[in-house]
Length: 463
Image 1 (cartoon, rainbow, N blue to C red):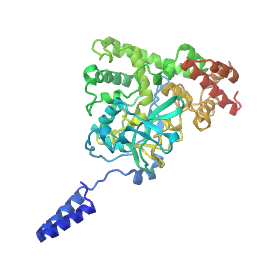
Image 2: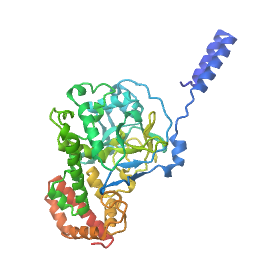
Image 3: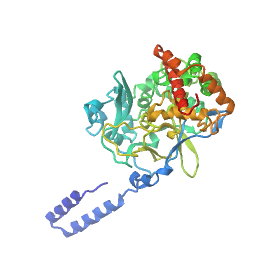
């Protein structure tokens, strides 16, 4: 309970009006008791995080199983105090404090960000509010950023300024989807997720998506099966597109992940296909559905430390937080623990203005475009193409491999030579000519990838 100075003065005037000394004394006792018994010891990012920034970082998991690395990011989380869930405040769509009536935001006309007004977004906001995360909607919302004249990128946008060190996003642990303990193989948690996804989005369940507690509202916001988002990953490339990457280790890891997915389907789903939940259209689940689920695990799941005394870490799907886009230069910090009553946060590493995108740095700044293309389905061309430079440095033996084949070590001489031989099959000019007339998205990505790597290699005299 919060008692303002105004409330205290008002109470005193009432007591004086009644002119009863005993009532005055009792009122002061009551006020003192209320004021002292409701003090919070909640974690303050301003006081704690700013002095412990070096302890909060993201790095890639170093666990290795058969040369296949998990692409999940390990979060080294600061311990947070437990907080009570916020009370539900009503329908977000009509609330003056929530996402401002679903309009546009931005400092200037040229930077207007369109907030998501879809029924799915409204249901998702109700889900967040019902799960104790409604206060986020006064600070940020889902919005579409104009990237070009004909393309907008969905992400999270700030609705108002946020000070450095303050929480931008704050999600109760109970609202996250826990897919089990950390491990290098993403296919196991993918089966767990796929089963829950199908059960949650059956026709009988989706009828209740307007209920604030319905997880279906969250699952309907995830990238859909067969959508453009997942098809950008090498997991869904044709053999031709994989070959055109001119990247033998990327091809090798992609094929191993496909093999692992196929093996998991045959061992965990196919023998139980009758009892396994049906796909959302009522048909049996296929290996392609599992491949999509594996991609969701590698691209959206974060590995979060649990209780410090247990020493365990868990794979979590964290609603809203998982909608933050990548920005290598982002100083925002991920904080929290996978413990009951805990919170999972994005804390502002620098002042945030209204309309700013709320981004995080995927892979903690350690991942290059070989990882981004495999795990997320995009190529990072920011910061003078440093994501390509990282790949070039690996090929030249100047940088250790972060994940995948040979993780934690310098690339072997034979792998380096094989990769160089592949890249030398064509020149950059020939690659650019191939790119001009290409419309297949996978081949476009393959050509852009090898052009970027070759340009970076030329910086170091490698080609």
